[in-house]
Amino acid sequence: MAKKQFKAESKRLLEMMINSIYTQKEIFLRELISNASDAIDKIYYKALTDDNLVFNKEDYYIKVTPDKESRTLTITDTGIGMTAEELENNLGVIAKSGSLAFKQENEAKDGHNIIGQFGVGFYSAFMVADEVIVTSRALGSDEAYRWVSRGADGYTVTPAEKDSVGTEIVMKIKANTEDEQYDEYLEPYRLRAIIKKYSDFIRYPIKMDMKTSKPKEGSDEFEEVVEEQTINSMVPIWRRNKNELTEEDYASFYAEKRYGFDKPLKHLHVSADGAVVYNAILYIPESAPFNYYTKEYEKGLELYSNGVLIMDKCADLLPDYFSFVKGMVDSEDLSLNISRELLQHDRQLKLIAKNIKNKIKGMLQSMLKDERDKYETFYKAFGRQLKFGVYNDYGMNKAELQDLLLFTSSKEKKLVSLDEYVSRMPEDQKYIYYAAGESIARIEKLPQIELVLDKGYEILYLTDDIDEFAIKMIMNYKEKEFKSVSSGDLGIESEADDKNADNEEKENKELFESMQKLLDGKVKAVKASKRLKSHPVCLSAEGELSIEMEKILKAMPD
Ligand code: ADP
Ligand code: MG
Image: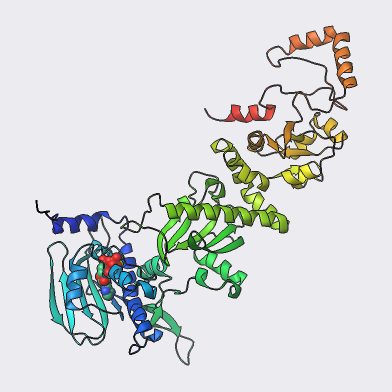
């Protein structure tokens, strides 16, 4: 039996596409600018092998012109243009991508900067326009053609006039409705912001006529003038040579991108070209954003594909415990879905995320090692997050994080890492001791710490709610168990002490019994302690939970 071809109701398909692919209308500008950039790139690639073609970079640009009166938005480019046939094929056939074909034909010539691949982006213009008029003259042709469409009801192609090679797209912007605003796409400042957001790193200048006020020549007065400005930065900082970049360059990128209102404490510029190819600039902020420890805080890195912004907060790139990291990732290897918005469980993305996680860890470790003051500043802002990271997910990530933790030590009350603690333990010390309390002052009043300190052992003072939970999750570090100073057996008492305590309990049997009666229901048992020095009594926990942990758990809502 002869195979039949699928038929498609193109009108419906187009309508469905226009209205369901994209979650944000503003991306139409990204799509049209990307197409214009591709069109210029094609001339550039052709010039690489065609000696008759000279590529003067200055001659190539994209221009965006809004006109409120006629309610039109025009995008012109000096790219390769389209013949009548190409207008038919590329704009008249849904899902036909001339750019993908170009890439495939020119594989050897390295066409990887070309953005287009799906053959649908162009139609996003109909999200904001009632009518789209494309006038184009192809490279090497004297004739120009005009493609006109109001969307679903089809298109026409007719001969037209155009002085120079390239394409002009005029969009008749829709009128505002009760639910939807379109006027903003005629506002120069709004358009400039959209261009900055998505297309800042397009490699050709995107120009707009902007009103600015300038001092009048020969007077102090200012006058309004219209000036053609280049809106985009063109060369992404992450593609520039690291050696040429200064601290200030990175700091101003951080500020410009509004990653935070503080300064970056540290940055890392990654150019990975192993199993996975990507560029990234990662920042550790100096301070925690005001909402950092709340549910409102959204983690994520900016994700670019080939210099074009795909997502402003890609959460999948960061583990929760490194949610404080800011910055961006650019990769050519991502398999985008058709809207270029979502990546569904992309293998490539997972690889990048893993790679980035290790980079961040490395950056923190080297900071801890070589820039202690900086690390402590970082730790004051985000140490709590690391401790949560150890505790969450049933301690799955503790191995990853335990070396990054710091706790206040009884020694000079300075922050100490577990590695530092263990490496300076006296030989006879069996455990890593800790004491939990509301504040250091409070902890220092604990009767239980005396004996340990007298032995010359160091104690970790845990003052943060999460501290003890994290420690319990780690269980032991370099084969040393953690021991709360208020636990029953400290591993210090000598046999003589044991005997003494036993004897005292026997000798004062009545006293102990009456105390037990008085405190009935409040304590489990009253016992003679082997651990007291200058204090008469202390509370001691017997089970898994310390007194401090019990307090915290009781205070938590059920
Ligand atoms: P994609 O960019 O994914 O290929 P589009 O729907 O955005 O899909 O564009 C379809 C095709 O139309 C492009 O592949 C390209 O061949 C052609 N095209 C679109 N805009 C232009 C332009 N400004 N100049 C030249 N060709 C263009
Ligand atoms: Mg496109």
